[in-house]
Each structure stands twice: as structure tokens, then as C-alpha cells.
Length: 489
Image (tube, rainbow, N blue to C red; front, side, top):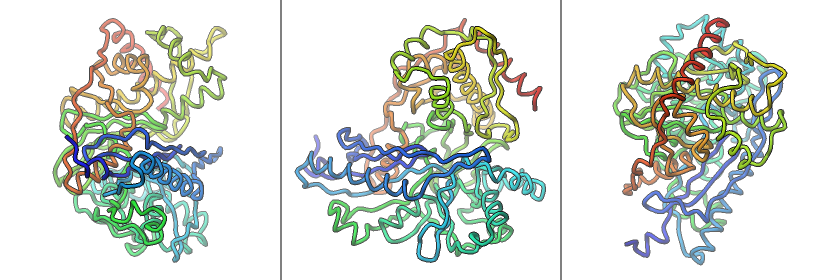
């Protein structure tokens, strides 16, 4: 039975994504208070040159609006007599901002998807031993990460580069606005490409090469921050709250979906997608092509991410003029059990990442004919995204052993057609997460763990199992997908 304190003491969780920010209150067991859910969307500013930025002002406004809405909802539920014990934050990895000496942005938020630094990444690979850098940092030398982005900024805008007093993730900047102090979590630093996950420190050799030093980066640590006095006046509920520095969304997704032990993988399908396994230990290493990111000093992730997932579905719906009625689309896709469209697609609208990192490879649609429909292209594109995840799953298995349970969160978990297709392409059971907002819950779980709360662990949900004959058809289509990539690569 919950005590009076349990009913009125909460954790606030915030999830900063590349397309929207979400927030909600969670109870002391890690259960989301549904009535407190808030969300604000914003556009990603892109162009043909590879730009992929978020406006810092739009992100700050979304953050403030979501927090305010969740707290107001909490007041409505509890008559204004509740307090927030801790705040947990999840944020998309690899985002980069430059701040001036007063902590004000001199850049917008440069996201992982921004590929304008592709040539700089290539130059760095020519100068560095990429395998040695990967062993040291857990990150590839690619356009997603900070080294190439910093080199590009210094090359193309030296004046701006010199104005920057600190380089931070967007979550660090936002939390500094609310707490008055900047700090970078271990679980955020690990995704920059500048951090040593086995030694828990910035890599000074890489920093020196890029023309920056540790004074231009926030201190690394998971120690909590306090709410600033100005924010306390506005939101008394936050007066005693401990703000834990933001962790990467991938780490949060594993925590939030319950994929926290060997043999359990979290597969998240959002704007991008990733498959990750959480392990324990200090010697954090991953096979070349996969990432190795810290969750905290005791735990780390091995996995791989792809750049094209929900963003590709959104492109199909928009550009192919497909129905905006999700139920109508679901009914149509449920009937399409196998790939009868004759299409083979390489889904590289945005520069691809794991496991091969062929950033220069163009997207391709092979097999178009006069009978091809918009729905055919949507189905084939979805399948191609799942093939990329199957490649990552193969590579992860080689590194960590069998993965008997793959827990799925994000848009696909709500779609029976998608879950069945995913199970048949992976040729193994997939388990829909009990929490549709895995990264948001993961932010809450991280904070709850740090304050010593006992969090409810999810029990496995009913799996969606592969169908033998359909899985065999998909195995043949998957082989054609791989063959096309190999011919072009």
C-alpha cells in the first residue's frame, strides 16, 4: 500500500528528442502518471548540404512548456500539495552547442544527423587510426560525433570557433539555465567521441588536436544539481529537487524498457533507431563498427544505431501523399504479410551509421515499375529499415552472445503489422515494451536509482513470434538487400 508521502512525492522526467520534447511525473516505483504527460514538437532545420540543426530557442521553449505543463497537471491532481524529489533527463546523443563566456548560445543545436562535416571526418580518418580511436573512445570517427563537427566549425567559421567558451550538449545548456551550474553526465560525455569510457575522463590528446582543452568542457560526473532560486520561486515543487545530469537517450531507453541484463536487448524505433545490450564492468569495449557508451561508471552499452527509421516513414507519408489516418494504414499493411512488391531499397536518406558506416553510399530504390504503388514503397522502406537492424543484431550477438529477448519500444510497438514484420525479419521473438515512452521512463529510473528508490522491474510481455514460412521469404529478400549493398560498396 502506498503511503501519503508516496502519493505526493514524485520524480520529474524529461526526454529531449530530435523531433520533440516530452515530460511527465513518475511515482517512486517508476510508474508514469499518465495525466501529467506533456509534449512539444519542433522542426529539424535541414538542407541539401547536410545541415540538421535545431533552434536553441525552440528547444528551450519546448523544455519550459513541458515542465510547466507536467507540474501544473501534478498540482491539479494533488491540490498543489506535492513536491518533486528528483529530476531525470534523457537527451539525444551527439548534439553539440557552443556557448559564450556568459553561457549564451553562439551556435544552434547541431544534431547527430548533421553531415556537413563529412569531409572533415574523412580527413580525420586519414590522419588517425580509426580502430585505435574506437578502442579508446567507443566511437567511430564519423560525422555523427564531435571531433569531425569541431574540426568543420574551426575550418569553416574560425571566428565563431574562437568565440566559444564552452562546448556542451543541449541538455547541459538547458539544465544550466534551470540550475545555474553546468555538468556533463558520464552517460552523456560517452557519446561525444572525446571521452574515455574505460578511464572516465576526457581524452586530452584528441582535445589538443582539435584545438580545445578541458576548460572548454563541463566537468564530468553524475552528482545532482540543485534548482536555481529563480526557478524555485516559480515552481516551489522543485525547491528540494535533485537534478541529475542528463544521460543519453539510448542509455535511458534500456533503463526504461527493462533491458538491463545480459541476454536482453533494447530496440528503439524513433526518428532514428538502435539496438543495444547493457553490460557491467570497467573494461568497456565493443567490436569495430558498434558503439560502446557508458550509462554510468558501473554499466555500459554495446550496440549500433541507424540514421533512417521514423524520419523515413515520415518522408514516405509526406512525399508519397499517403493517408494520414494511422488506422487506415495499419489495416492496409496488416494484409501485406510478405514482400510481394519486387522492390529492394537501401534506406540511406541520411548518412548511414552502423554496422558498416558507409556514409557516402547513396540511397537506392531498385525494382520500380508502372505497377508500383505508394504503399509498396512504404512497406519496402520499412522492411529495409528492419534489415539494417538485423545486421546490427547479428554483429551484437557475435560480441555478447545470444539475445533471447529483444524488447521493442517506439512507434513500432504500437503496430501489430510492424511487430510481426520485425519478428519475421529478425527471425526471433520480439517483446513490445510495457512502457511506450522508454527513454522518458529511463530518465526517471536513472534518477530513482540514484536516490535509492526501489524501481519496479517489468516482466516480459507476450512476444510476437516469427512465422516460419514468412521468415524464410524475408530471409531471401534480406539476402537481396545485402547483395545490392555489397555490389555498390
